[in-house]
Image (cartoon, rainbow, N blue to C red; front, side, top):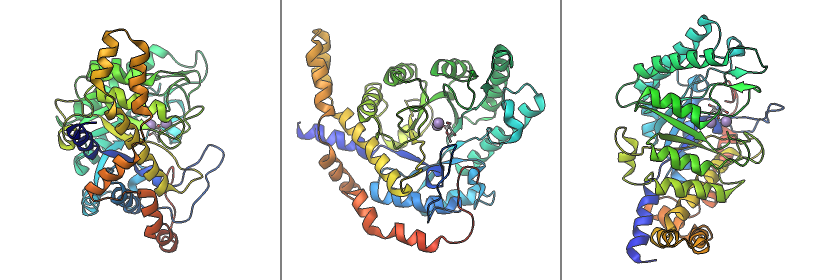
Length: 403
Ligand code: LRH
Ligand code: MN
Ligand code: MN
């Protein structure tokens, strides 16, 4: 590859920002068991301390997404102070994830619940999340609703859409010009018969009606097996409606395993469509600013149930970077020529050549040039952080789902 092309690939890789989820630093599990790990953060500040390690070793993960109310612990309701704490660590606070799925009141749903009092309660929480965004300077409000039904006839499917639309529109009006809402879809779970935002089409239709500040969030674990996620990505980017990713990987359902672990080829195909749709263009600052441009947030949303959390997050960041690097290596001119000529095998070969390239040396150079570590996993293991947090984080309650 010509020298100037390598430089362009490196520039794009250096400006990528991968947002890590605060909840991935805490304890999590399946519905059967949460295995507690020693050294896990007890407060949101300790989660940020861990995130700062991820940033230090990788150089591309300076943003941390919050989940409310999980991140109240240690924030003392002063999110302006929390944002300064993050800034002191070289971090900034990213998407604010609303949580209207863990209280008894939400048994039959939140914003689509048949009882207006429950809908009001849910909407109040969404509004409160926007207040928090005002304090943290976050751009995105991430909305995922566990709403749906388990049995045919349980509730009116159309009425639930009306209620959902009403809440979305109220929260949309509350957003400033610089803020956005990203609406995440999920096929099933916890609802098993009908889900109110089950797929990208439903999310897209609501976002289209709401306006330019509303975009779709693609969580890679939220589809039916076999779904062509890169098609969805290509379509949404073309329409200017792709807002964010929740990256994770899965073998069966919403497994929330490390991004790129189950299917690195799928992650590459997704990142190729992001690149082809302009999602990697511009500087990090340009992409983070709302308004024109693709503005796609690359977030992780995963749970480390059996593996140590900080290095698992480092590994995930590296996996996203590897997929991105390979996507950037695709020879677009050769690909376009083969596509124009109808040369199926050459076109496929161009893509596979990029996927089969070992990009690890290139990424090691990128990290070194960023002042991070060539081998983040080894650097973390040698840093003593894992031992220090086990020693120091004693007493108190560990953070996890619900704390
Ligand atoms: C739902 C989901 C959503 C939640 C997160 C904890 O399955 O993906 O993004 O906020 O998990
Ligand atoms: Mn998600
Ligand atoms: Mn999920």
